[in-house]
Amino acid sequence: MNSDSLERGIEYIRWSLFIISVDVFVLVFLLFLSLLVSSLAAYIFTVVITYFLLVSTVVPYVIIIILWLLGFRDLAKYSRRYFIGFAGSLITMVSYFINVTYMGYLIINELMGNTLIPKPLVLEPIILAYSRYFIVFSLYLPLPLFTSFILGIIGSILSMLVLYRLGNDFNSPGLKRSALVSIIGLLAMEFPLIGGLLISIGSAFLAITLGSIKA
Image (cartoon, rainbow, N blue to C red; front, side, top):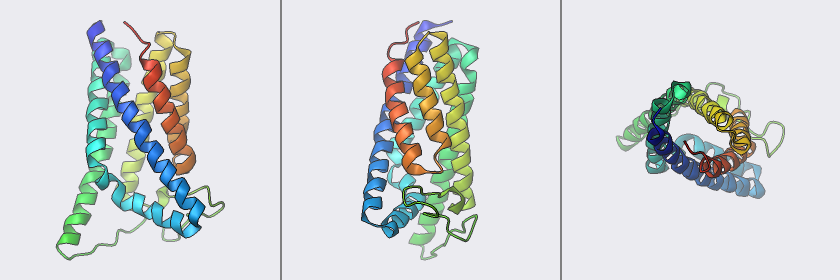
């Protein structure tokens, strides 16, 4: 086992987690503000997230994906026990590029004067169906974005499971708890306010507790 790979991998992952935590918190905060204004504002904000978020945050997400991939690659070099995290990071990267490709396709057509109206998986809106604080949006996404959404969740959970295993191997209860909070947040992303807040908190504590892991 190469201790340099472990420490380098942890640093890459920590930086990506810090960026994720800040980015997701800002989005959750903006969504919460929109809910305070009106249900219509929440609906509009959800649509904006669906079609424009990933384009407006291309640079930070590129950084996250690169750091995430490098970090779990180095963990896999340190021990094959952590290879599933690298596999998860590859799935997450595929999810990201599906998003970018699809959004690029829409923008190019828009610039050429061919306005496209993406067809959602379900036609009846289920947003704000039960409570103005529970915004269900994944089934309202066009197929490419829905596919990317599912792949992103799967890839991220695989990577979080490896961070949980890392906490178990190095006797770090804080790391295990933070990984579990992040996993619950990912599974709750059907409700962006709750899921996003949990991901932001879990990512911040993961970044902090990872700093205590030493070879």
